[in-house]
Length: 467
Image 1 (cartoon, rainbow, N blue to C red):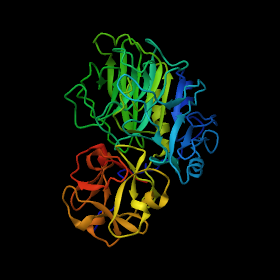
Image 2: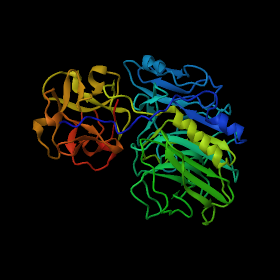
Image 3: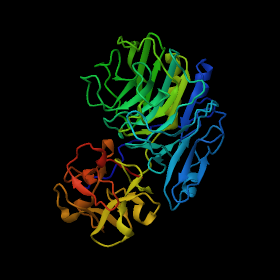
Image 4: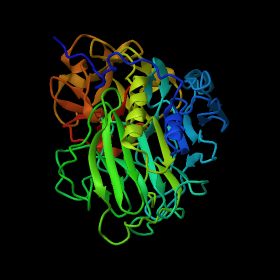
């Protein structure tokens, strides 16, 4: 029996859409630890919020539009994006701060360790939330957002809490998929000048337990699993959707927590003293906000971002648990098999898997091409029978030859094992018969590069954002 394509995620059992009665920032406010920044392309994080969630910009004419919730305290009206971006490419150009402090995230500038960032492909991360089809932020190397001139973000040794909801499959060991507090000059200003929650597979202070991904603290000059960096008790979080939380009282103590964003409670991976190395106790936070990069704009990582908050203060464990319960109520899930949409490349999110000229011709090459809204060439369907289809045909391994470098082509669907694909962890698209991966050869994202079959190696050139 052919292996059916699976997106590597499961819907939360019994999860109901989030109630607008008390959303995460309402919970923090009731605890006296108010949100000073709240970002999400998925949903409102205040029950009373009815302003814009994010902005998309078209490549075809450079115009932009804002995406709002469908109702006050509700989920994003993704139809706005779909209609506005039809027939062209859109990136996410701004993520609005819902807290009222004006801490909006825009595409990041160059920093001490990275060139200027680019915006995320707006269509690359479809997700179901509360039963609604919406879009997250799909971070690939070079993608990042920042606000260096913020209002009321903790500075110095002020206490801070930050959480984000991310994806346990779209990860790597690059530096650094962060969300939180960073330097205002986009450079490394020394120990303790950052306070950001990090998620990925980079083990800074070895040995680490397992292969990750881990929720860690980016406090600058290190990703801390707990204590002075190394913490064998941090086992990592690899569920499809992950709640990653970091809180820091700024002077003596920090805590790292992680959990399944679809069920259960948070696990406390660490709760104890700040690192004893000079500079971390007390902290020296500067108050900029980053998403998808390190404080010096290190931007070689991948990740997925659905929602995140920075709160002023050091919330109780009970408050953390209430926030997690609200996240679980959203019911984050992958879109159902059979959904049609783009398949963006993991090594460059603005590039798509493309059936050359949308030609329904046996042997037509499947290639890398800038995402341009050409639905005939770039809107693939992950079918329930394990095939990936477009233009009436299938993604095909030429001649059923299971060796490194075999070209990928379009071919009439014929039920062959060389037309079967399965999405695995880390967003790899694997042929079950060979155990080999769909691959962008040598990370060559240039238009016209034909895709190949290659031994799976975990590289971003083997990661694909499926519809």
